[in-house]
Amino acid sequence: MKSHNNTLTIKDIALIGVMTATLEAGKIAMTFLPNVEVVSLFIILYTLAFGRKTVYAIFTFIFLEGCLYGFGLWWIMYLYAWPLLSFLAWRLRKHDTPLPYAMLSGVFGLFFGALCAIPYFFIGGWSMAFTWWVSGIPYDLVHCGANFVLCLVLFKPLHNCLSTIRKNL
Image (cartoon, rainbow, N blue to C red; front, side):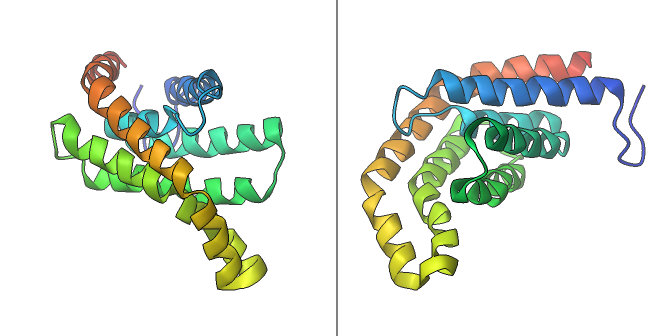
């Protein structure tokens, strides 16, 4: 059964549940390595494979993160950072090689701290936001490198797997 008029089918809801579960499981599995994560890679891949349905998974993941870790200031940043990554991946969707996506993932990791600093601007102004961002640059560099390498290495096999799943849905 196909979904019409933005109505979600039972298959869509199951798919969103699986995407959300893998986002959360991937995040938890990598927590022992600071700023090394697979969430960026999964969001890029899910966006390419499943389009708009990914947005439901992203916001369910964000809500789940709040439930598990508390709805702090960091949580507000998730509300715009992860959808932004999905939007940017969608804009690159015509590329069929891993490099543009690895570059996107790396740049996203590099500027993750800057994205996180936005709420601090509203709390304490430019100096607070800038100070918060600059203090995290070493972590952003790790985030950039890890995102780039993970995407470059894992993009093709995971993309092929998701393409097969999409065809069978």
